Image 1: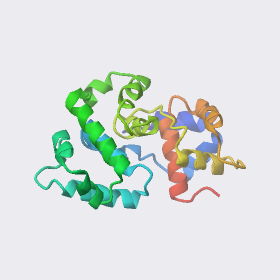
Image 2: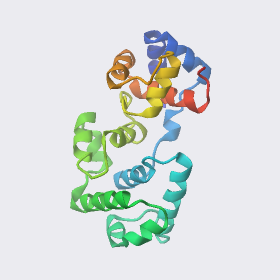
Image 3: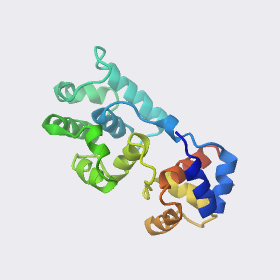
Image 4: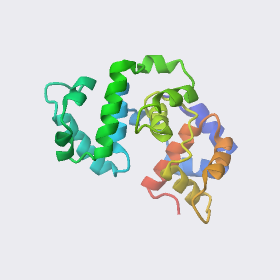
Length: 207
């Protein structure tokens, strides 16, 4: 994936962000691309909600191990699995209900990734947030990491807001309106800017 045009644009539009980008180096957003079909991606997202990456990865691995005969369970597999089996591997009751609601939507006709490709971001968000437990942020992660949309700004993402706070020396976490104001400078490459903000926290490059 060639991000050269986006990188040049962002550096010119926001020199402070540009300095951060120089320190981090090449954008590797495409290396974090999610795998699997829509059902796989949304199931994984549900399991990862409100957990650290380490804990979420462990629970997701246990989840997949429940179905040793397939790479990933089908919607029918999920619906046929007793709740207690999910509870025993650390999945909370709300998330179990979300998984099963997702499975019911899949059986009723969840769109394919290919069908989503031709829709704009807001249309995709409107369709997928009909599933219980799938909110705007979850769909935005799908847009960035699976559908490779370059202009998504997850204004409710704590990492993005914390990155903005540190990079621009704000006294407190920016609210939604302030985050959106920063995003206007980054359009049409908000996804790339968000990736650099996430990396700045992970690598502790911002002081």
